[in-house]
Length: 434
Length: 82
Image (cartoon, rainbow over all chains, first blue to last red; front, side):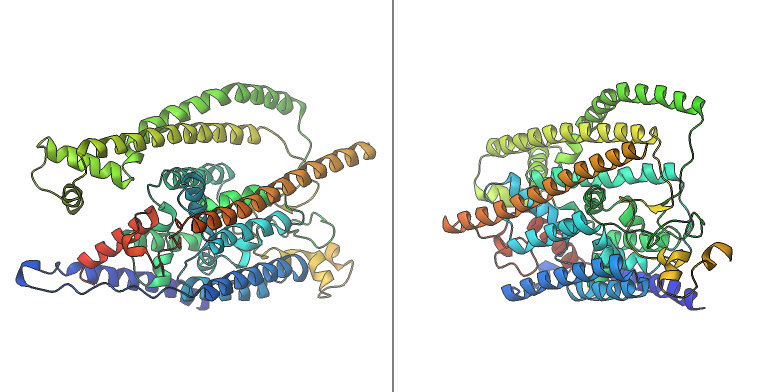
């Protein structure tokens, strides 16, 4: 019953939010010709600088506490409590902004645009979780990220995703990261912010399509643990890689794995890897051949990726407002469309020559074309590396949390009999016999 | 045999340590560079952007992608009657 309520509440909340958005769009736009005065849009006053630093302090405190709870206290209950706090503070109180996931775009823009400087608070929001991951693993994902927290609440009936499917779906996150970097670097758009699926919930308003995507992700999240974190989060991609070299990491057992296999199915995110057995000689030889083929194939994949994204660069470049405007003006000039838009009217009103607009647009398109090429090579190589990785047999003597995939949620701790001994819930020696 | 595996282990630790501190160094450099750039632009009177649209003082006349995205969302909402 309690689980059913937990399922109904987020779904009802999602539907309610969509209803608000639908209700808004049902009304026709006001008739400007009838003398209706459109009310002036108001914006909240600038937040005092000191509050921004309070946010940074809260982030620092939450990261430190999360790392302590995951690695020292090993308490799922306390991790869950901190996760709820983060959801309330960074999610509902701070409305999901500023968040480290989107902050990366500001950093990228700052690197590529000489006239843009990113605020130091944004830099800290981006870097602090990365630094913590380098030392303690993904403790940010465990209990600090509000996007992860909202999904963690709905993990009710998790099912195992086959490894090949998980690995393939994870490519989406790389694609998303690549596209976000490309569009931010060229000053086109901040797509991570625009398509953030859960910010609309935190703000109880937003684009209807994004709200529906968020609601769908939450419904999927009931059966597939944290789908956004695992298959889409672009920040998660960076955290995954940094987590591989972290100084300390989550261990299922507090001391030594006894291979009891009790933890095997405890992870809803499929991040537990079992102990390995020796390979039969025949398989080993076959795998060596496959590895050689894949290494040769890697440059071909890189080239194919480059070709694919080069083709898509025209579509990607339309994300830039100047390119869109140039396209529109071209259509109007060539008589292919009869009406005008606000943007084209404003452009004509500015007195700027059309040729200059076309030149600007073609420069931007060239930049996006080059970026797409690099992006394609990166994706092609990534697929190659993933295939190569699957041809290599890793040696493990016990059950362990995968360094990259483990979200440090702490669910597996209680399954380990050695942990029960540590907590003095069972006696030493009982874990093997009962 | 044990000696060999411990050698591999220590080599692996050395490599991960090197990667870890390199990443830390890059992060530190990025942070430092951002700080210096911001100060430089401020000194030149060019730094007007607060980076985050929510609460930004120059949002109205800002042409950066984040602001354009926010304006697009807000204009959509305005058309919806809110």
